[in-house]
Image (cartoon, rainbow, N blue to C red; front, side):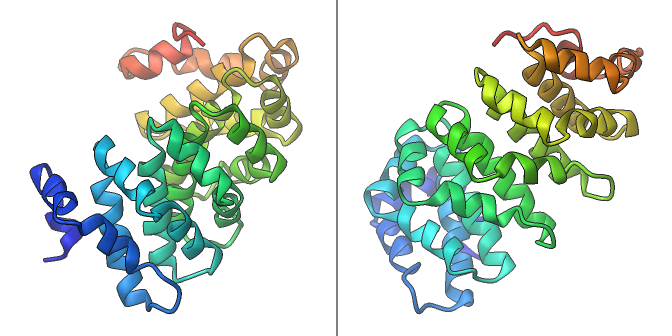
Length: 261
């Protein structure tokens, strides 16, 4: 059984207390093999899941530049997936880590993971990481746009992708557009509005529909041009179609615009 599998609940604290975080970060140094890097990054991802103390410890031990370095060196898909997942968890609700990832060049590195032809599993984790990085950080939102991250996120909404990738890409777009008129306009320029309407029109799991509806809410909030574009793309009819009985309550709230900015 791997260390990542064992890291649940109190085990997370035990590893940290024994100096395990520093040891795991040390394994990420250049020159190591994929066979070492993959379980080490997986363990760090688990350690940072819903554990604020461990997120701080990883940062203090130099884990952020070490993880970003793995992305920059272009390791195996499995290593890239785990490293992006670790950065995703590190950035969740932690403004210091969100800033540190940016300072280490991590935002641009994560955007590069979204390039066409990559692994769906990597795309999923990278899109989710961008969502967390941008939730509370205006500079990260701007940087994603400047790195052309909005365009690649829109491209991930195309038919043929997995539900998991569609959900995370739509979620990232939603976060990027909250309180950012520039990003909302960029989504429109990149064809994101017809892509989101198309995602909803095709149907799918409730989680995908919820994120798609949330993204449309976010891009249209206080934005007349985007509201017009949604109407012109048939989005209003599509959203009304999603109001049929039997839909999820969470998805319904986004369709009705009950959530606040």
